Image (cartoon, rainbow, N blue to C red; front, side):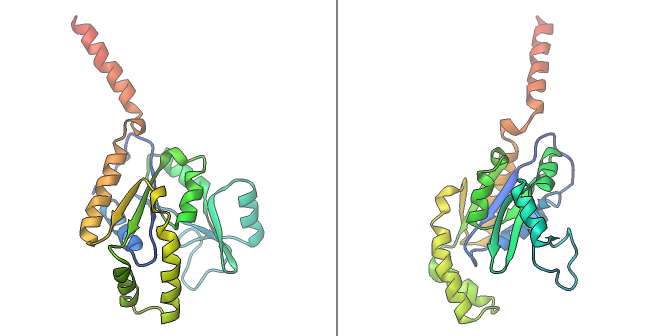
Length: 217
């Protein structure tokens, strides 16, 4: 897909799901479909791991720097995960949206809720991904062969709470087949880009059409 700057304000795409439902896979496919999409880079208070770069994997902040950003309203959403804080800085997202670029968030329902309650709420398009069944969800988690039985059991317990928030989202995809879910997701994003409210040039265009009518009379 060619990369061109659209004549519209960008949208903020929130993609959420319980672990194992396919959120990360769909996020990667959406980025491959349109490389102009900007993936939101989170800030964190944890130390960089070998090979990680500030501003690429994360914005690495001290605890005091992170807290100051929160206090000054510079975070769209944030949460504490074990001993570290994670959050989404507002400025890079605002800059991208103003420039007509869409921003993709791969986050949980809590982060999505905070963003939907932020000053950028009107720019949000939220999508929740459901598994076709709980048995299939567990099967996908086990097929990764990455986690112990204890970790998988913890993820399954957490998934019930995550799924309970499905109705808070604009769109819900049941990921029975990842290829089908990808096409549905692309259709959603394509349609949202064409919303009248997101095409500032339409007013001027219609004025021009009316002027042409007047000139013909």
